[in-house]
Length: 506
Image 1: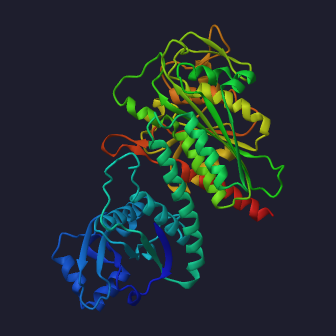
Image 2: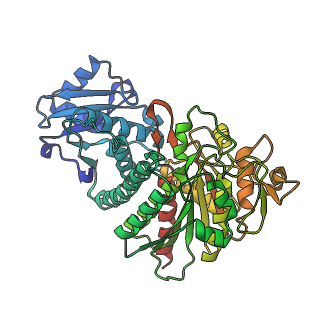
Image 3: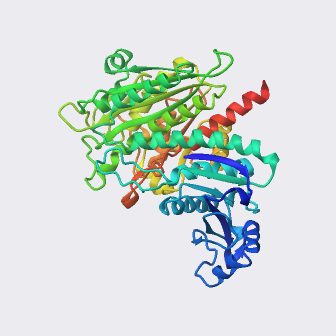
């Protein structure tokens, strides 16, 4: 999808569809007023005699509008001016792109990006960038595995976002660059996450990492840590999770070197990559178990963020880790009651084999100490308890360092990829006490997302660390089943903000 910005000139677009906004109570936006005047009141008369009232998402397609050179005009409802926040703005753009694509248009100019409403925290850069990212999200489909692909005879391939001032063009172009990089990486993260588990295993993730290094060979190098090396290192908790699977557990390490000083301490992103989670011996219920292929969405989001860093040439050193494995039952599977010795030397009593993600991550959190990280963020579909707490709207945030938590919250607000911070305190740590080992892998009945984070915190005390529990936000269920690509946008914005800080200080 090609996205560009231009100063809107109605005379130039004879063969495109013009997109304009209509506010609640049939109030016309300024560009709609202009077009209505040119057409001698035609637009207003049609609206008055139609069901279009300007509610958010309402659409009305007008063909052969008098005195208008363009092929047609798409009216899109924007609701009340005061109600147009960041979320509703995205909904309006999403509905617009879907309508254009479904109607068979190949090209459109969208005037919604210059609609004069005040959206808190949404300046020209953000209006264009959000529009770019949403445009690509609206046309996304995963049909790589279908023999008969349903493709429209004519699909949208070019969108022009209109700006009102020449001074905004450079800002808009910058926003397009960022938006396209993030949108492309979200798409790839979705594609990886949507792959079935018989294709997407730890080896597949390692292959994706190698392809990334081939594409960005000047900036990215990769290597893999397989079961043999994990055994030598003493990563017994990670290994235990994959014992029941015939597929090898593989940790894929992606190193991006963009800082001017190669010795700059890296930011480390760790993604849980359990490519299928049956729960192991503590077997999950069969209903919706097919969705457990999404237990590697954390790894996919790390892959996406690393790709954004490379494409935008961010002046940072970043290490991304995709912790790949598969949690299966079998005669070699680890059991409730087992005690494993982690890479850190701490022993863990396994009370539930379905609490496997923290066992994988705890060894990775120790492994990355060798890189002397500046900051560590792990991303994992870790607990159903987080879904109970926050639903499917926000990811859970935990951190041992307030400034880092604030950075992530700021990035979340900027992108609309929302998070909510939850506590990790000593009271919750006590729920992980074990009578036979240093720590149990689950707590008591309540606060499961918190006790899971408390578990990880015991392995992350040597650096500034944050944990994102994306169990409720990584994919959609039901009729619209599929990966969301979250939190690629959030992670990318966090990295962009860090890069901007570097640029300002240099």
